[in-house]
Amino acid sequence: MKGSKIKSKKRLILISIGSIVIIAIVVALGFWVKAQNQSNGSSVEENTTEQFEITGNEGLSFKGVSVISKEQKIMADRTLGDIEGLNVSDKQEISEGDLLFTYSNQAILEEVKGVDRQIASANEKINRSKSKKAEISNEIAKYENELKGIKSKEMTPELEVKATELTQSIQAAQAKLEAEEATIATLKDSSGDLKLQKESLASKQNKEVKADINGIVYINEKGLTDPTVEYIRIVSKEPLIKAEVSEFDVESLKVDNEVQIKVVSNGDIVKGKIISIDELPTVSADGKGTSYNFYVKPEKAIRIGFSVEIKLNGEKIQIPKEYVYEEDSKLYIAKLKLDDKEEPFEKVEIKAELKGNNYSLIDGNVVAGDKLMKNPSELFKEDK
Image (cartoon, rainbow, N blue to C red; front, side, top):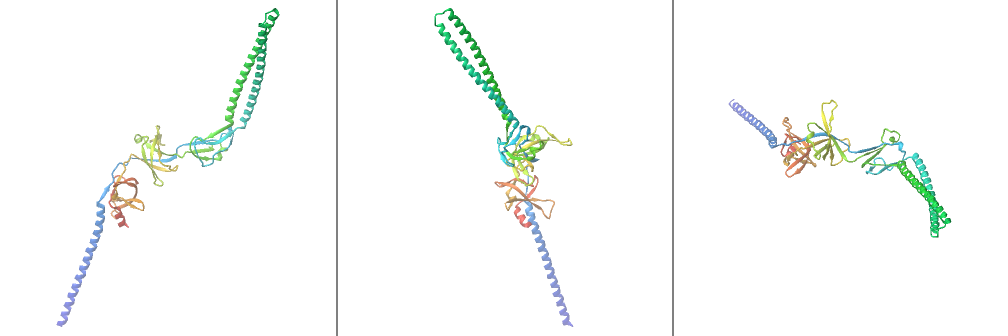
């Protein structure tokens, strides 16, 4: 009996020791897990403690659209004649002064032929009068020579009569000569007028139509039969942006102000310059708002109809390079999200230019007041 009691006590002791060891192991594991969790949490806290707050003036922002800067519309005018010799093709690029086509008017051509006949008739009359004038001049010379011969002789009654007759003949011939000279002058004036008339008609007979601007030609064959549709349209390739500014901000705009243009559809960033601001306002349909149109010339072409955002007078946001991460030739920042403890930061792509130790922001979802986390590359690796 006594031996069995001893064995029972030893068994109890071993069980107690085993329980204590198990409890110790569980407690140790608990402390280790807690330590790991605290360690992970502290790594986020360490990253969130070094922050950079965005500052700066964002400037003014406007909405606009890429529009046609210049265009020339040409209607087919049948009163000018038939269109002949079309010298351009659809969607061809042309220059100012290039010949597009020529009008040929057959009715005017007949008028020109009629004027040519009148000119020829006048010239024939002029030639006949010139011939008569030459004959009269010869006749006068003959009379003058005879009179000179008589005067060289001793005058007799018979010679005096003859001299008188010659003098009268000379006077009559001179009157005829003057009449022919007047006729010739009249005919020459008439011929000159006819030539001017012919030139005027000829300019209408074959009228050239040329391009007033540089650009791309668009031909609509419907314009040949429909007088309400343009036959040829030339659209300038010179880029232009049309935008609106409110009455409260219009005084902030000045011609030659440099602006930044963002193409909404693809995110492209283009520099530009304000080239004009309308003096007269546009009033909204409800009559409550007033705005002014202004125009921007971008440095490169933007597809007609594309919407854009225009920024003016904004200070370039500077971000220390320690807060920017480059991956696959793209730049990212870690923007702090104060209202989300599970995901305390947001990965945001930006467009920026490195200048010294700072990135100068060109575009991105970053505004004044945003807070960025340092060493975003480490955060992004942890996030993976």
